[in-house]
Image (cartoon, rainbow, N blue to C red; front, side):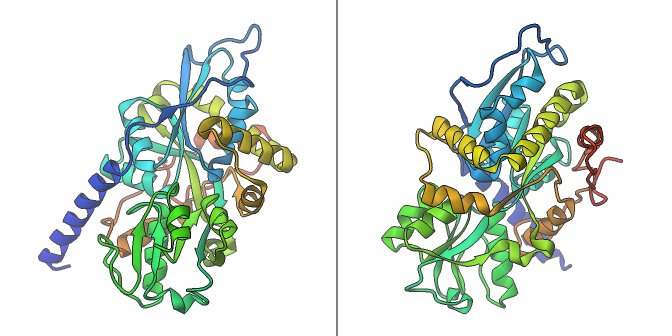
Length: 367
């Protein structure tokens, strides 16, 4: 690689990471105390901790966290150690909270996890489990866009520069043979970085022609008259790709492995409960969304959104590696060394105890 090109690539990465960190405000919000999670009489503290602080997004792709909290499953597994929660709107703010010690464990998308890992030279976090696959769609205004080739020349929203959906859309654009400057979003397609909360209004107003977004935003756009033009799952082998992982601060994992194991056990138990009780789980997730945001999702949005998400314990590590390669191809990331980003030891211990199949780190584990 010519020296001047390498320098440009380094500056591109240096530019992206601060922008990502500035894109979200604050370290997230403390959610209301649960009325469903009670400490059992005689319960003992886990690892001697007063609390474990858990972060997640108010997003259906974080269903494990939503349902596990609502049903009191995290609290049950932590015993007398209080499960405390913080909700976030974007991955960079959650990474900041993890690095600062404001949270210990979090549910998060793959791109922020990769960025957090690379920015800290592999010292800030580990991915310790999976949570969800799928739940991402390209939704368009059918009056303006009738086929995939019609996307060229249109304004399409993604949630944030360099976030998981932004990287996926930029990669898809490149696969069509079209050119877009990743930083500005300008080119054969105009990529508009828009918070998921405001994208439905922008879509309704006609300021964007579509959006590549996660659930439930995709189904909100459909409820406004949008049409699903592409489900991202169709672009992946077996229609599986990681959309949500579980991460932990490395120092917390080293000092409090029993607490981390308890949270992972709660995650596995929650996923089993979701699989056995899909309707109750959907209602529980919506109830927690209402508690966190003050507003529940209507059935017209909730039902199709829930159907498109696949809950899983498997972090689908091979797809994380592919997503990192997509970010490199887009010019948003220097080729990262992801060796050591996973530590699935405790998850596989929990899965074995449950009689379930263990999961693979695709050669990116600590061993």
